[in-house]
Image 1 (cartoon, rainbow, N blue to C red):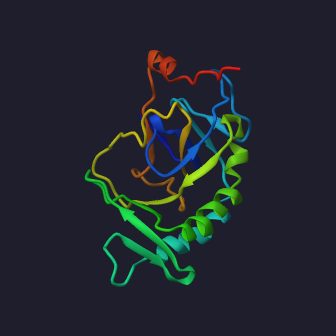
Image 2 (cartoon, rainbow, N blue to C red):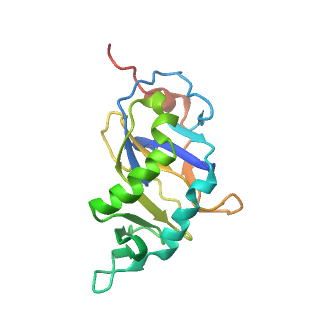
Amino acid sequence: MQPLHPPLALRRVEQAASAGRRRSRSRQTAGQMPPAPVVATECANAYVCPLDAAKLVALRHIVEGLRQESGGQKSALVFKPRRWRFHAERPTWKSDIRWISAADEQTFRGLFEPLFAKLGIASLFSFLGDMALFSGFFVTRGHTRKTHFHTDFGDTGSRCFTLMTPLYDMADLRDCHLLCQVPTDGEAAACAPAADAP
């Protein structure tokens, strides 16, 4: 297992853990290297790159300002200053992790779409294909008692991605990092993306 704790990590979802979802028409061929500053990792279909942390400061304020919607269900959250509404989900495994997604179009279009553009995700990862944002999430977690490898989506033809970037510097933490399994040589060959037909 290798911890991935750079400022930003993009992984094909057949190999990855949760967060926002990305799609592409894959143009990458086996062995093609991503452009700087994107770096391929030793984990199958996982990439990292630096990111301007100053662009994320406002997001911390949003996450810290989320409150349960009055009169709403426990999973209904709101950021009152912008009237953004969110839905929170928790898994059944041993962690306090929560996926907090936009609960309406206003929140998706007012927060996540502009963030996707501001961070330049489509441009950074254009070597993988045309990027489109389908959903955005905050993933919050303070601890975990056991590693839980899982797949976000299956059978996407290597065209769907998960992007994760910490809102806080987590470099000194022992746990709570994104982990990936380093494939054996045989597994790596099986995971290599196929070239698109002309």
